[in-house]
Length: 490
Image (cartoon, rainbow, N blue to C red; front, side, top):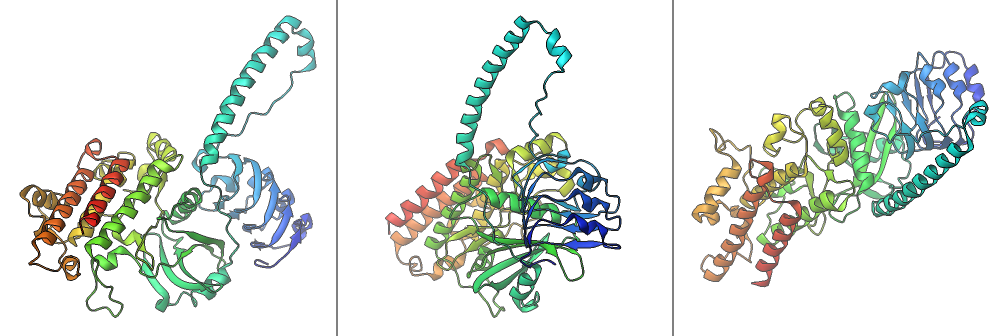
């Protein structure tokens, strides 16, 4: 019954259906509260109520259902405390995101604490309390209320600075299936740790559809993390989410997907390392284009670290996660393992970072993550430095040449110290008019000065020790200065 236009309340009489194992009312227009009577369906194993307009609290009775294995109530208007029993203790079978007024629940849900309920004193005790003590308590309460009110107003002003919830349109599994032509191999764009990306057409709009492999450990959490991160961000250099799908497929299995704007020029990785034998071979990038892409990239990371409250740590910066628009502007994508700074801190204190392994990709991940240290903005800065070196040298940190202690970072640092930056620069840079005249001494000098400044910036970003690295804001300012100096000299 999903994907229809059913309206009104969910009838409690559904409890009378015998042998019902799956109830899917996703993507309708149902309102009112969730009837607690649904817990009386003793055979019910899967309950899907996502993408409706349900309100009120979550019935505590659902937590006492002994048969319920999957519960999806995401993207409604539910509020109040999340129960802690039964299905509400099963993170792999529970989906509640998109309900911004929920609180409490088990700690792993990372929801805000519920406000304490206010209960009046028993009548006998009120009579026994002397009037003087009562007045004193009242005065203290008023003073405290005034203080909390001022704090609340201050916090509210800060909260208003953060991005508003993305209002995502509803999309069903059938919509995704149709958009990707049945997940056709011809529409395959790439595969990642937790899912596969397809190109498709959704309501005449070219889109990239990221389908999560829920059989892979950590993929469900990756979906939740990416939804939460993307809900908080609004920046021209970050990939834009169009909608998402939280449903079940035709086999009755959980299905999760995110739909993004399609990037016609794919990823930076394809441009830095063009496949000569591929029919879809990319072109090459000029020095000016690389500078523009680099400026957009550091601006995006600076926004995540310093423009979001709380800060967001991407955790997986690399060329394949940097997408390019039709006019070759940067869009940073793949927030599947991104962490919100306050959550990363709480995870670290609970020693739970190891639950998803090292955060990042081999060659780009900060060395301290391999030692079990918590994620930080300095980890992103390290990945940024390595990515920029790769962008301007055309060499990948996992190339065969980097072995026996030699790394891409040391390779770049040695070239910078010896003044040999031109020798390590990507040879494709010189295929473009702005820099291909090997007899133009002024051109060569300008390009060398620019590349030397970039390599120096990259080395400072990719230092082994976190506190020796540049801050994101300093890296952004320096990258702008390098780009502007090069362009002004042309």
